[in-house]
Length: 380
Ligand SMILES: Cc1ncc(COP(=O)(O)O)c(C=O)c1O
Image 1 (tube, rainbow, N blue to C red):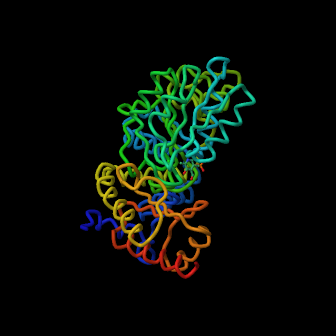
Image 2: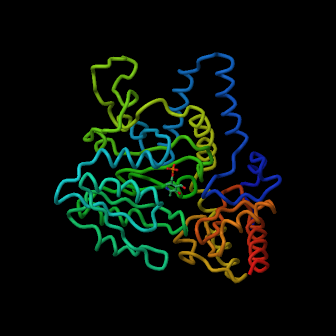
Image 3: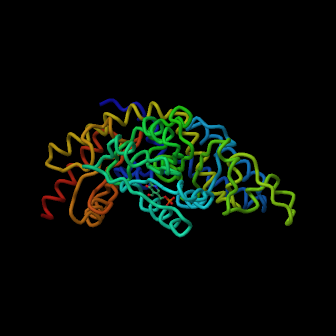
C-alpha cells in the first residue's frame, strides 16, 4: 500500500526507533510542535514577560481549531481538559421539572458519566443508552431521547472500541425532540472530518493530545454563538469578561460568544503546541488523512482476525475511526511487553487499542499485530 504521507515521517523522531500506534491516547509529537514549545520557553527566557505573544498564540490555536471543524473563531473557548468543558457546560444548565433529562451512553468516556451524575444533586436525571454488541443503534435515540430531554451527550468515536456514530442523523432525532446535542469529539478530531454546521452540533469538546498531535493542558469548546449568548456560566473568571483588561472588580459583563465560558490564564505552552499541531493537520487536510486511514483500519481489522484475534466493535472500517481494539486478558501487561519491544499501543480494561495516524504504514500495523499475537500465544 502506497504511503502518501511518507515525506512527513521525518518530522516525528519517535518513528525512527518505535512503532507508534497510540494516537487514541497520545499522538506522536512532531519537530514542529517541539520547536513551538521551545519558542514559548525562549520568549520567556529572552523577554522576561511574553504575555501579548502568548495571547496571540492562543488566538491562533482557536482560529485553526475553528477552521478544522467549520466554526467561527468566536465560537471557540479554551479550557485545560475535556472534563473541564463538560463541567462548565453542565453547571450552566438549569434542570427544571419536565426538562431535566440528560441522555448519554454507556460507551462514553467515564468522565462524561461522572460530570452528568454530579448534576443529579441539582435536579438532573441521567439516562444511559445501553450499547448492543459494541454499537448504539440509531433507533435507540428515537426511544431514549424524549420531549423532557434537556441535553443529549454522546461521543463521535468511542474511546474503548472505536465505534463511529452518525452524528448528523442523531442530531436530526435529538433536535426534533427538543434536546441540545453535545458531542465529545476527542477520539475523532484530527482523523475524521468534522463540520459542526453540517452535522448540526450545538456543543463540541476536543482535547489536543490524541489525533490533534499536541500535548495535554489545553482543550477546545465549540458552542454555537446564538446558544452561547443565552447562557450565563457559573464557573467563570476574568477571561470570560467582555473586557478583561479593564480590571474592574465590581463589573460583571460576560463576553460575546464562546469566550464567556473561559475562566483564567490558559496553559500557554500547550497553546503553542496546539497551534503548531493544528497547522500541520490543516496543511495535510483531515479529508486526506481520513481517506488514508480508512483502508488502514480495514487492514488491521482483517489481518487481526486472520491471526485469530477478536475485534471489539464493528468489523467494517466504515463504522469506525482509525483505531482497532482487540480483546485480550491482562491488557496493561501486554501493553508493557509490547512497549519493551518498541511497539507503542494502548490498553483499556479488556482491549489493546491499535490507533494509527497519517504517519503510520501498513507494515507497522502488520508488525504490531504479529508481535501482539506472538505475545498472546506465549502468555496463554
Ligand atoms: C473520548 C474521551 N473523552 C474525554 C477524555 C478525557 O479527557 P480529559 O482528560 O482532557 O478530561 C478522554 C481521554 O482519554 C477521551 O478519550
